Image (cartoon, rainbow, N blue to C red):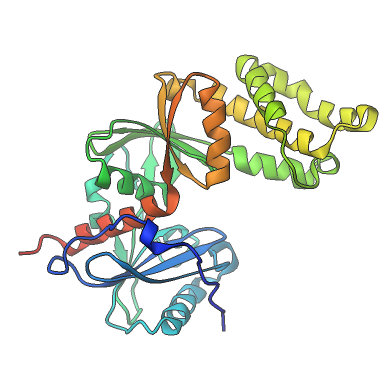
Length: 322
């Protein structure tokens, strides 16, 4: 049996993502990622009644394990079999539980729920939301589109750039309730690979952070992207010869990678305003990096956007109510 790992977040801090009790059923919302699993039990009006989270990500589950994990968690929360579930994220990938085919950008976010796929052969009503694909240049996302739906659900007039920092950071143009186009930078994954599987692992081990080193590296590489090539090994050399601290090395490495990302995505943020959705400390790094380039930044709560997007998609799936 998989144990529930309680989520200690305060539900009262989240906006109410639902409508009145006459407009929808109670349901369960799930964000199922590559390495993580977050579940919320919601009342018909959208209030969070209960929640669970755990390391039950797609990467560690066989195809026949998703239904078992979901039902174990729901049983622990005493959720009856007649309560439906809506899921976003990697559970809908080809290697996940049940493939929910991509919808193509530009795409109306109001149509996300209609693209949901019902999981066949499962007793409970379970729908998985699609991801979004882009034909030229090729790109895909799963999960981020739901967070963006959460944004436009509360801000229907939002027109601008959304950046979602993470393992694979997304930069997305949103206009009139649509995802117009987007790009992906593997900044988080490259940082992890270099810290854990390269010679730099000896220089970046440990905690701590050097904010000045981070910003200096962002400025250096954003203005001269080619300098990245011969700057990385200097971290190792400076540790050996000048006793560079691991906190400075980690911050400088992060700054270099964020700097090359900013150089690559200049067309997205050059207009001077970006909404950030993601883990708070990571978003803070992007905030200071963008602010150093005179970009106005709005920080949005990741959980609230995810939950709001799932609630909006569920209402789309349910259709109009009298």
